[in-house]
Length: 380
Ligand code: SF4
Image (cartoon, rainbow, N blue to C red; front, side):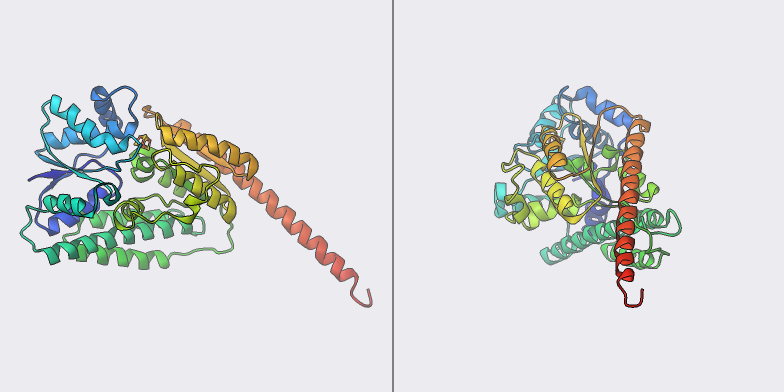
């Protein structure tokens, strides 16, 4: 078996480490580029969303590199991603790209037993026993969480760093080491070391950077090519930000805690119904943002994503009622980045200016209050 899976964020990094620990060969397709997107668009239905077009191109290239089995995440939901496995198979079969397919659905949809059966097929080529496989799974989960924690810390610290680019350098270096790590143990050690390095960078806590929330469609959140590397753009601008929709978040939600519905999702009066994708989560994030005093939200999704278009409309209402500042960035199949970057820069400029004015008003009000106190002191 030569296993492959479509690119989605760091899945290929951790996937390589996990499967090589078990002695299973995997084929990693080349990184997404605009030419791969064109290749995928050439064989995809016109109206389908961008994640599909990229995934089909990934699998065509992996097939050319010798892959014969596909592991494909699915959600069985009303979002089209739930049906991608079937459609990908049909399109690729017709063009002669024959694969064995392993659909990794939510245990809520197919049951724990069926999910375990599919997972065991995934590792059937390994000569390791169940305890070693479970240990490797646990180690890989810690790897994903550890890397995401490192990124989360770096995304927040970046607004306070004294040496511009220090946080970004640590993340890039960590990824490079993970791409060369020979075992889960080595990869975990590397992540620990990078956490220590991040804790040692020079920061200036007197700074008061913008604090944004990045949210939106799941594939665009996780796969950097699909959001035109927005995290790097924000880090280069020195903006502190948070992003909760990650690979680890998806694993927790789909596999580890499939029945755990967050309170905030249930009590979401702006979007009380499930409409597919993760639109309800996007809105819940917006509500959280308005409660927790973030400076703004950047919503990202690819053109043609129906759930997020609905979320965008709901954000319009929240902008009026909750005074939420939202920038919606919809990515299409054009490769040019200047237009997107200009919009993000303008949004950041506008919020920074508003923050400065608010700070000045607050400062003036405090001074006025203190002057009043001084005037009533005895002897004055
Ligand atoms: S959430 Fe939107 S972009 Fe993502 S797979 Fe579903 S429809 Fe497509």
